[in-house]
Amino acid sequence: MLPQIDRMLDAYDGGRLSRRTLMLQLTGLLGAAAVVGAAQDKPKPASTFQATDVNHIALRVTDVSRSRQFYEEHLGLTLRSDNSPNSVFMNVGKHDFLALFRADKPAMDHYCYTIKGYTAPDAVQRLEAAALEPRRRGNRVYFDDPDGLEVQVSAPN
Image (cartoon, rainbow, N blue to C red):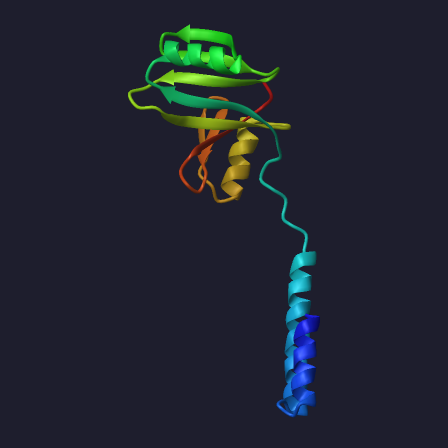
């Protein structure tokens, strides 16, 4: 802001700016600075949730067995559960996991965040209050991000 004021004063001193125009420009500049400052000082609204971890990522894969082997061999993931030939859950670290679901085309199915104090009814209520469209499936709650990627919120595992 100081360089702008210096330019205005130089223009005034050089006769290129009248006293009245200088005062109007300074008033406008200071008013704009006050508005920007007030907007920056305004506290941010509380977020809908406070995610504590990425709980899991679910992928659609064309060959569950092949993908399981890949993640074991290259990332050191270990088997959490092998529910059927169409799905496998693999441990990532101490708490998180990767879900692999059989599909015709590979894609990300969804990803999930751990939410402190999670309950499904509360999650639905918060999402609706935030003008989002929750989808509840049992104790699981899903919603879409702006690009249509499916997000899940959950209690810690």
